[in-house]
Image (tube, rainbow, N blue to C red):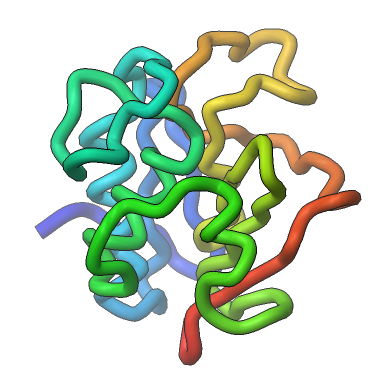
Length: 147
């Protein structure tokens, strides 16, 4: 069983891994554990689209991977399709932000993103947990019912 932290927000460790909040539903803990397993994989355009298991991931492949681990998605979706995934608006635990060219998610308060926007000291490309927020302007904001 993975360690947890008190409260409702995940904690980002210096190692780059996230620790799920103890109060999170198991599906959210599963999403965080899955994200941890592919963090620091390389950015590969189209990565994660043919199969959830890939050598590297692009933005929507990385988001699809964690949604699948949480039991919220059956097959990988590109960014444009994630604009229509789930329900509109913010989720309690998982929110997906998508537009035609990019997708990222906020899971238990941490940003899961392949882009280093607002992260000058964590500039690696590919799937990473990001401590900073980014502007949702221009993104469709989506969530799964109950999450």
